Image (tube, rainbow, N blue to C red):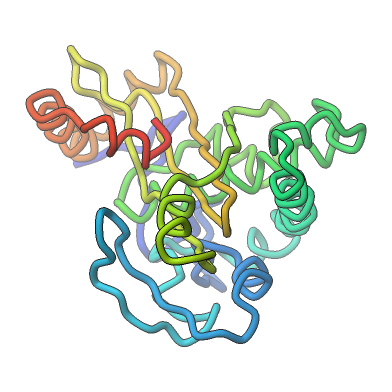
Length: 262
């Protein structure tokens, strides 16, 4: 039986993965509908797994398709008033990043703009957007809610706990060279960093790609968070430990690491 912790709280399917509310729940987009519309327009949308070839490709019924939603839920209050500013700021941010990339500039130089001065509301809102996505990814694998990350996502804390890098997506680049410019969006699922000795989770990582732009974002767990996960959330700890052992025995290839932004 898992216990209620202080730094991590057990997620349940019938509760918001950001605040724990149980009413007025909805599914959050894995990739923003507005971003998909901007990238695809009215063109047909397909999803699939991209490796050396394209696998399991299937049509989806537009940006609101269930295929593009997390299984983890967010309540109406978190999805609107608590995270709406972050959603809107990310839309502005991405347009500036895309323009930087198309101009041949370092997309991360967007943070040199006065508008995104470190610690400012626009700056924090960009990171809050990725904090929300990371909470949803963790919720999707039935992991416990990281309280520090969730409270940052809904503006209850201003201490940023998300790391972010921005570059050109390698899959988009490689496939575009062969097949022409792709209208491409993707997410990297959830990657959990595991401790080599304990096997416990030391951090959470994912990626978001819109067109040629890839965002790599992650959170590192503090020692107290790692301890609480191990002691109070044994089911999730066992799940992570099994995968940590597997990854030590069969490490990711350099190509796999490159595609995951590791």
